[in-house]
Image (cartoon, rainbow, N blue to C red):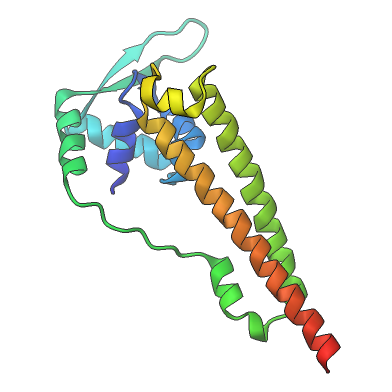
Length: 191
């Protein structure tokens, strides 16, 4: 996937300014695609030059004017072409996994500290996703929303994937910490 497809997907529902697109990334898209604000702005300029988005200036009183963008028919065709191609599997590249890989040769206490930090981060992020999912559903339970919800289901499903990913990270950190603690206790008690 290229950044262009993530930006096009973020613009599907409404016209957004570059600032609003970066906020949309932070709120939802960031669980599957990370981009810095300057990357988003540069991509919007490229997409506009290629005719995949159309921009227009909005005059604002007391503030600088802003540009808002919307997906064009060509942009939607680009997304359809992207969606029809086989998805490439993603690969996990993470420092913490390298650290755990080397656990037998590292200070377990320091590694448990890193795992505790990641656990807390994953727990907090999963909770944020859960709040976002709750807002997206309105008053509906998940099953009703998925079948009959008035809003688009795609953003909900990707947000749910983000929540489940963070829950899996949290659970894995907990399990690894338990193993390291048990091995440490066994090593001290078994000597």
